[in-house]
Image 1 (cartoon, rainbow, N blue to C red):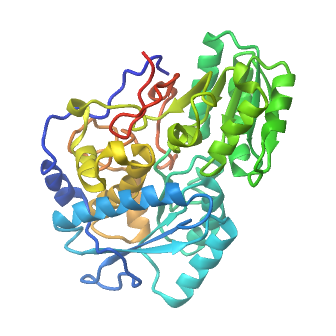
Image 2: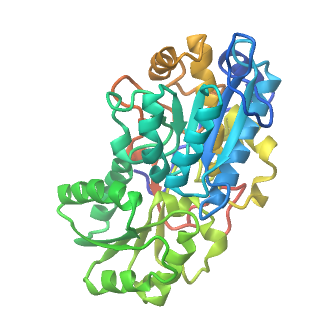
Image 3: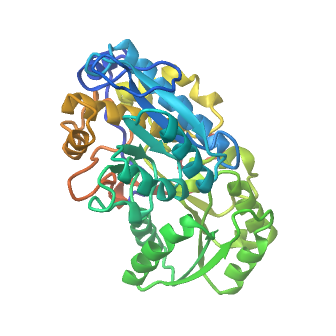
Length: 411
C-alpha cells in the first residue's frame, strides 16, 4: 500500500484513435439498446445489464451505464467482435436484489439467452443473481467484492472486474499498524457489505494485533449517529466506515452528529467511489482517510492509457462528472473485458468464454493499448476476481476538489 500514491495506469503518450486498433483485435460493437440475443453467426451479440436505474444506487448506476455505452460505442467504431454487433438491454431492478431476480427471470422467460449479463453493481445484487446465471450457463461480469462469489467450482461463469474485500482489509491493516492503532471500530450497513468486510477485516487486523468492534446500522436509516456514538464510546482509536450510494452522505452526516470526527476514520472503497466530495461538507470529512483504487486517484494526462483517454472523450469533461471517474471505468471494463474474451475465444459459447477469460492474453501486461482500464491482472482458473494487491490501493486524506474526475491526495 502506498502513502502517498505512486502507481499510475499504463503510461501512454499515444492518441485516443490508437485504441481502435486494440478493439479491432480484442473487442466488440453495439447499438444503444436491444431486446434480442444472438442466435446465429450474423445476429448481434446481446448483453443484458441488471441494475438500479432507480432507487438508492441510481447515481452510481447511471455512471456505470455511461461507461458501458462509451465502451460499446468505441468498440463499434472499430468494427465489432468476430464480425458481429453487440446490443445492450438494460433492466431496472430499482436497486433491490429481490427485484433483480424477478426482472432477470422475466427476461429469460421471453427472450433468447443473452451472451453476457452484468449482475448489478453491488454484491447484494450479484449474490442474488449468481445461482440463476450459473444454472443457465450465462457468463457474467461485474464490479463486486464479496469473496463468496469467487468460487469457480460453484459459480464457473461469474467474473468480477473488482477485487476481493480482503485486499482492502490487508491495506487498511498495514496502514493502521503504521499509525499505531490498537483498537478499530467498524461502522457499516447491516447487509452484504458487512458480510463482505467484517470477516476479512477481522482476520487482517488480528494478524497485526489490532482489536475490532463492529457497529452495523440499517441501510435504510436516515440517522446513523447512534452507531458512531457507540463506536466512539468503545474506545477505538480508529474507525473504519463504509456505505454505498445514497447511504454515503448519511454515513458522514451521522459521524459528525455523533462527534466522531475527532476519531480518525478510514472510508472504504464504496465511500470513495461515490460522490462524497460533493454531497458532504469539509466538516464531515475531517480526519477522513478514504481508500482509493487506481482510477479514483488522480492520473496525469501523460500517464493515461488509450482506453482511459477514449472513455474521457466519450463521457465528457471529467471535471463536470457527478461521480469519480472509476465508476465510469468499471462500466467500460465490463464490456471491454467481455469483448476481449469473445474475440480470443472466437465465440460467445460460455465454456469457451470461461476458458478465454481465465487466460486473457493481455492480462498482467502493462500495455497502453489494452482495451480495459482499471486492473492490470485479471483472472485465472482458480480465481475469478481481479488479482489486485494491497500495494495498488492508497489510503490518504484528500483535497476537497477533484481534478479531471479523479481524487487528489493531500500533499
